[in-house]
Length: 81
Image (cartoon, rainbow, N blue to C red):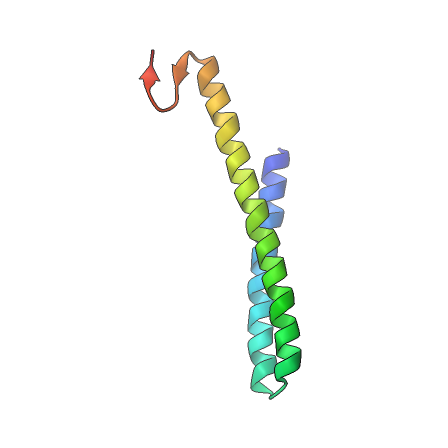
């Protein structure tokens, strides 16, 4: 259950990072380049944190899935032994 919460928060952070990028474009169009740079830096940080959470939760789901298939007596890549 914790994996799904982590993945949901990761996707929310990715969406927030993309929204901050759009805000940065609108700020840059108003000729406030320095302020837009600050918003882009914040957006990239949030986007990186979101992708990290999505990657970690996906890797954990794959690892848990391979443990369950090992319990069934077969290897996930080689089939039945």
